[in-house]
Amino acid sequence: MRALGMAKINFLVSLILLFSVLSYTLEVSPNSPCAKKCLDDPDKGDPANRDHSLTFNPDLSCFDREYKGKNSTRVGRKFADCQSCLKDTGYEDPEYGERDTGWFIFNNKATVDWCIFGRFAEESNPNVTDTYPYQKCNRACNTIHSSIDYRVKSDPAGYAFCDYEGNFTADADTCRDCLYDATGLTILGNILSTVKEACIQKPGKAFQLDVDIYNASRIQIPSDSMSSPSSSTTSAPSATVSSSGSSGSDGSGLSAGAIAGIVLGALIGVALILSAILLLLRRIRRKREGKIIEMPNENGNRPPEIHAGNSYYDPAATKNGQLYRQEQDTPRASELSNSGMIVELPAAVNQSPR
Image (cartoon, rainbow, N blue to C red; front, side, top):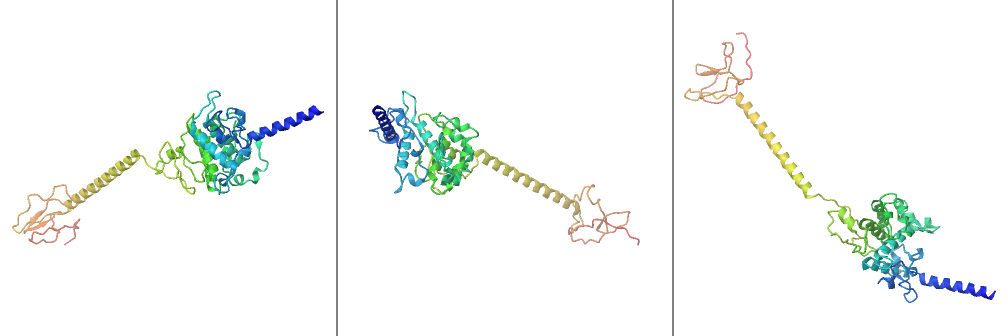
């Protein structure tokens, strides 16, 4: 009995020691330079031991206030410090091939999965429907419900989730926008943005993401820059931070080729209009020339030419110094003076009995 009692005591002591080591720890590569920031207590945990850096749901924070500020929590501050380090080290463990960038993405996926859907692989929150993130954005985030949890622990550094039951890079936008619009969930929106960017870059040792993720200001990721050519605050491959109340991806622009095509089309249109106007003016001029006959001058001399025979009026005859239009040898026209004025004859002459 005494031996059995001692065995129970030893088991309980082992559990206490185990949880004291694993409390508030995050996944990190063995012997990573970030181990001191990710392990709860480096004096108790072994940076070289893979089992001393495991992520569980108590290590995750959902709200902006938990990361920074006077009301921040130890869990939130540790997560921000550890993750910021993992993103930038570019470290890879030579023995197991674990990379800090892989654990950075894994820990961020875990946060999105737990905070919005109340689960993290086998871990679950039975009261998730009562949580603020779920109530605000569960419907908007439903398109990534399956993919964000897909093989999250069995393939922690893999990218199979990006194409699982849809397109994560496209489906994540609606969820991210909802988180940004909700009060106190800006950092959670930033975390989701980094997971989306990971699907696009699929980083190895290096992750091109020069932004402050764990600050309550909306970030702009490189993929947003490429989809918004008119953005004036972005230069690839790095991202910039914009205000939390505005979106940096709403603008749109035209390429140089499109602008050149528009200008060329406008010039062609103007040329066609001018040509039509010129043609119309010429037709009006010809019509006027067909109706106007220049009369003799003061000396009774006629111009060398009057009009061609196929014009509206036939060549006229003179009688007593007056000009008539002949029609069945009966002159029916107004008498004209010898003043040399140009007059317009009637369009038609009706013959009437005398």
